[in-house]
Length: 96
View 1 (cartoon, helix red, strand yellow):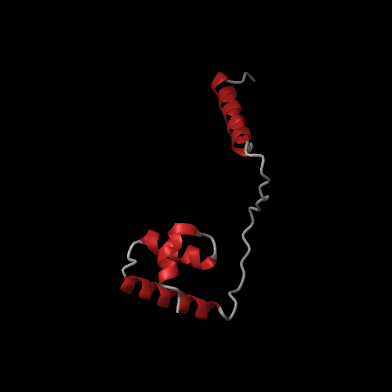
View 2 (view 1 turned 45 degrees about the horizontal axis):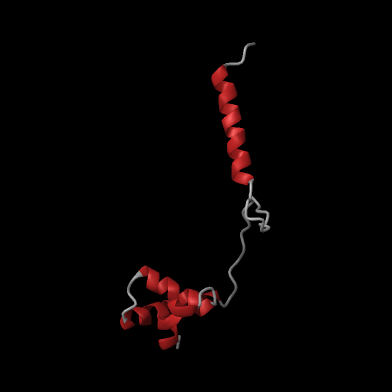
């Protein structure tokens, strides 16, 4: 059975895409991911944390932090993921 040229080209392109997508030129190790989905139950303190975050978000809106980027930056500063000048609003208005 003869193999079509377009089939061979397609297989080669897919293989190159997989190799290119898997290569890492930064030299830093990356965690190996899993394709399975794990369902977990929420801890009992989760509703309190959600309520607290909603209260903080409402307070931010009252203070003039109305954009999504402002709110995300605030929570990133609060969680320690962001620092520096971007956290000035957070430092002026700490969560209460």
